[in-house]
Length: 302
Image (cartoon, rainbow, N blue to C red; front, side):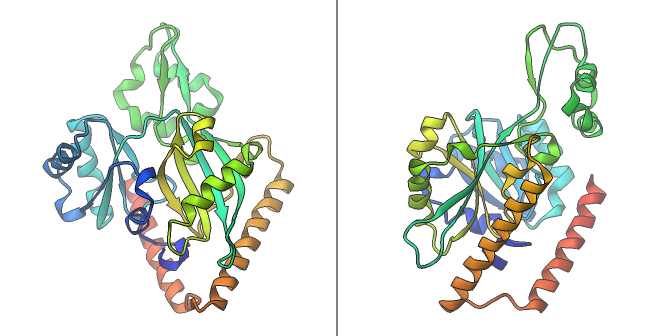
């Protein structure tokens, strides 16, 4: 990962190092050839149907990550986001019901690593009553109401639709905090089985010693058995996202965050001792400036 995955690094470069077993069908399209026809050609080659996922190569916090259900949505996405990045990632939609973020780290001289955080991501869903519109249901849902401006922009005219009684309506398909997902502390599932699975996965990724696996899986048993799909692999920018559990105290959240930063420092020093150079400050400074400029473009798009 460029800059250790701290800032402004290519997701595509990272994804291509994941073991194939855990990889959903993934394609990489330069901005210059991101068209409806090229995406459809890729889908035909992989024998995929809608929905699919599209995201910019260097996006963060869920920006530009969209589930595309058909050609009209694909056309709208390309028109809106095409010039925000030089490369776009198109992926098979992973419909597994459970989504987790798993923090893993290992010293370069160690055979076995550590899982230090597991977060379970719960997306916002509404249940229709046959009378209220989506807009009314959103306003009555405590968590969804916090994101009302976002949902109004996302759903547009669909806000007036009235779901049938008992109908479950998922508002988003991306497990991201800024889109309303609830992050729950799932550290209780860490055990020997889970550590062995992620030791095996991580040792297949050259030079990967610190970061977070974002994945989707059908069940906890499948997670322990290593039957899951990795949708993103993060590096030094990773957070132990269990700290955002609504029941987490501020004191404990800072304690856990500082412990992870300490671990990152120790991994960095160990890697430096085996000949890996630290990132020069002037390079980091340029990357931060470039990142801030991208963020301005993001704000303008939103």
